[in-house]
Length: 249
Image 1 (cartoon, rainbow, N blue to C red):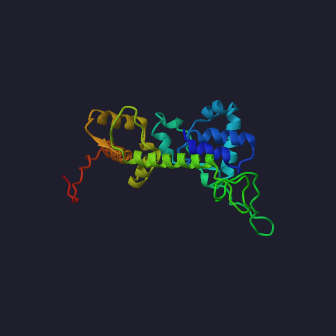
Image 2 (cartoon, rainbow, N blue to C red; image 1 turned 90 degrees about the vertical axis):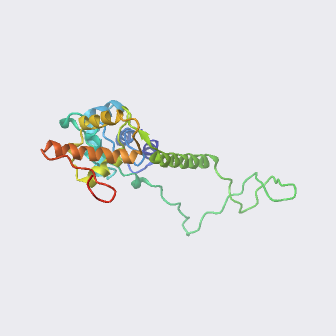
Image 3 (cartoon, one colour; image 1 turned 30 degrees about the horizontal axis):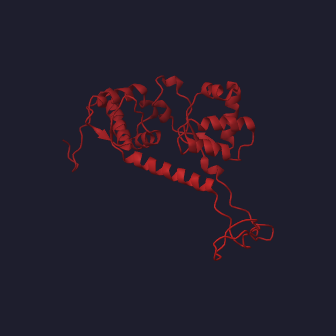
């Protein structure tokens, strides 16, 4: 679940059709914080929205036609699905489409003058005045400050998680973005990323609790594991690791 993606889906005004907005909101529930890697089945979306599968498919096409969602990397979905013939479509939500517009000036191109407020503070000797002088800005909105603080804390937490080293666990799942980047760079096709291969990888490293990596490094190790398994399956020799100076060891 992504709070950022769901908040964007609620606040955007590009999609006005109520049913399409409902489908978009439920789809955002499956995406990451950047709106990527959402791969619920049509049946899951139908169950979440209370709509028929045919209606869900029609509204997904509407969202694609509007450029709100595009087809993402199927390798992300393939890493979690056992059956190759049942891999659902992976969607990326284009959250940049719904950014808030800049404040409008009035017809003469001037910003509206601040309104006179009935109460407020000034810098008089006693420190308090019952009226606000003309031209004084309004007090900051505490709710906006609170929202900004929460977003900053979330970014800091995400950054800390990226640097955190941890041993392999049975519950671990690769970060979709990191794995997609690694498989793309190594030239690994989508069909090579299977739940069986991921399971074997985890089983191997669960038995080695002294080995700890960051989330990105685990994605890199998984991609190398998949590539090595492909070479072995093709009848080739297992590639040997490289030393720090580029010499095979």
